[in-house]
Amino acid sequence: MNGLIGELETVLSDDDPRWHNFGLSRPADEETPEAPSFTTLVAGVPGTLLADWDDALRSDHYRVWILIVGTDTEFHAVESSSDSDATLSGLPSGATVKVRVTSVNGAGESVPGPEVQAVVP
Image 1 (tube, rainbow, N blue to C red):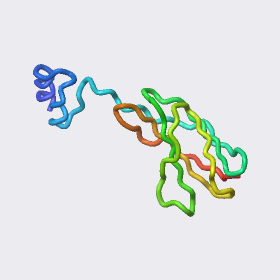
Image 2 (image 1 turned 90 degrees about the horizontal axis):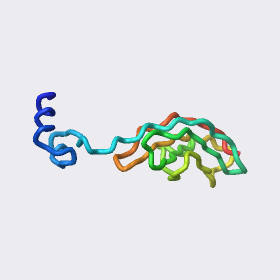
Image 3 (image 1 turned 90 degrees about the vertical axis):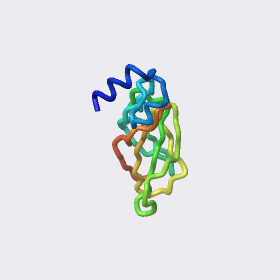
Image 4 (image 1 turned 180 degrees about the vertical axis):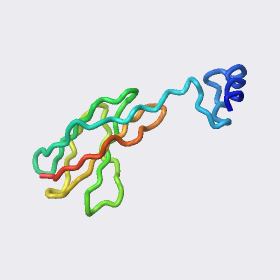
């Protein structure tokens, strides 16, 4: 495989789309961002949680995912933010909500950051 990659480096430009024909990323392709890490998830006003996480390398924006315990079977995206925080409103009071965040850029989306949970006020 190393021989193939070495040969491709000599015959293809860094942005040639044929890199993908070999199942490889182009050298010119942007790398996907790192996963963010949470710093806090706290209760806000009734029906609201405030999420704040650390900035992730190479991230253009973030996608916030939630799962309402006992109601949802899978996480679903509820917010997109260019900042490293979000206000999650319209949540059912008294429910336990799990939250995780992914980082997004032109190359794709990161794996989810750490999962945290809180009870909605």
